[in-house]
Length: 97
Image (cartoon, rainbow, N blue to C red; front, side):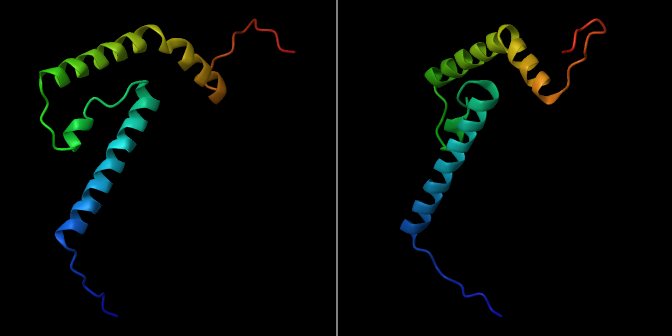
């Protein structure tokens, strides 16, 4: 069995490339949003864009926001996740009903 070779023209290749790049960026942003609570800081890198001073400042602000969230607000969220997954240690004097 032989696989037929097809030639794609430049316009089709460009369309496929931009579509896949967009999907890759969206996927990265959604994963970052779910994991860290903020959008991806390096989405422009996949687009082939150069990072300017404004982009660097936006990345720094996003990183600062992540730092604050991780150190001050993620504790209760993590405790809830641990309880749901059964990873908590029960106290010896806890009452069970």
